Image (cartoon, rainbow, N blue to C red):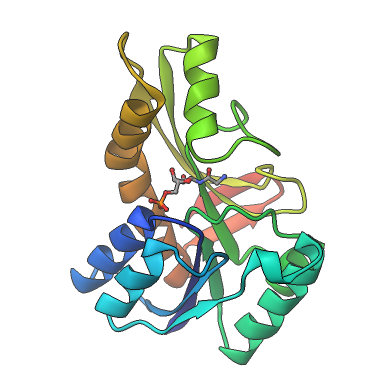
Length: 207
Ligand code: GAR
């Protein structure tokens, strides 16, 4: 069984999608062994507690830089003997120490069709604000491996979602979560745990 750590910062609906998939037996070959939050009051920690999953806080505010925080995170992940790190609404940009410690073993979900509306400053609701400002008719979600370039690693899966004329950022966010993120992330995690994701340069082959 691959040991999965889910890193969170807020509401944790993507964590919930992973927990629900696990309860349905859909995370084949893996188990969520830990939830780590960058904020002490994240509702995601409640979700972990309700599911009986150990929760930990490594607060961004306790460190002078995201690099110092990443080093502490890597130590914790090693202590917990983690095989796969899932960034599920994790609002800290992890630095190279993490990528080197877990090569092609960190998965992120991003709420847009990368390379659009991605990179530093594009997170959470801001992504949907930018998509609406630009006037795109389609947005969506991307699940990808994490590399040293923010939102730049090899893409595992994407789903397009329609943007409707009266959308607010909140409405669009919800539609993208329901139609794309909550499905794609558990599927990708399960494929990883079964050893079915093969990275070849920028391409991810699903075996
Ligand atoms: C999700 O939409 C996720 O894709 C996004 O934040 C939201 C977290 O929601 N992540 C990013 O923007 C990372 N760049 P959640 O806490 O309910 O899962």
